[in-house]
Image 1 (tube, rainbow, N blue to C red):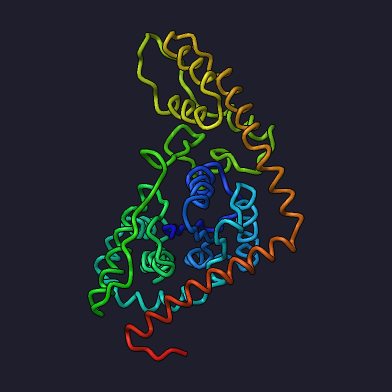
Image 2: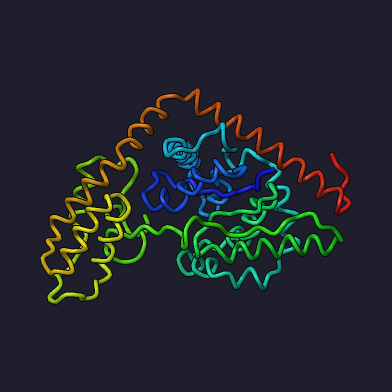
Length: 332
């Protein structure tokens, strides 16, 4: 029997290259090797109080882009989080196993308090509990996450173990964070600093739906420097970002060519950016075309959501039924 993998992405509208390489690439590979439960985390997004129309549109767009990037409903369970009401029920139960002190210490909660002081709601505080339930409800053992989410995996283990200890059972397994390779994929920002994030502005990210001319304009505006003056000179963060971007879409021989030019102090950043933009366009064109194709087939999207929800509910329903019995709540 294959191990179970679980992960999700918040529906934030158009997905950019960072989301794609940071999450969906792992999902596409994992669906071949694990029983994957991959979901659109619309319940999580409620902490920011999105408009109803925006939320519905974002869920639809995220599903389309999941499918366009290679997730196959025949090989995994692809669903919308809110279509599985058992998640909300187990979330309520597991709030009893999360303590106020540990929730207030979570770095992401502290960040949210700083960034949105007028909307510090209880959902933000108990966000790790809902994340834990997303994992535990399907008894997942593998969770593809970045380094900044590893604390949530540890908290999930804690919550599951507290439940087991409290009721003298060995019901929930201990999940582990998982990524292919030595480190999670990180896509650099076009502003020359850190990783790609929509919060930095539209021109710092490459969206999966960006047309070739848009990609070129964004890449050509990426900062660099005046160039190396001696062999072996260390790269600035902005230049390293350009090389990291090139590694995502360019062929090895192209990367080697520009590495050599940098070491020999003959590199022309304008030419390098044109190469990155061209290779990025070639990389994203089939995905962009697939997004358009799927967007036009509403009956297919409806069927994917209905079938995925049904499969996810079957798994979740058994867990909730077992949990109710273990803790002494009468089953409905």
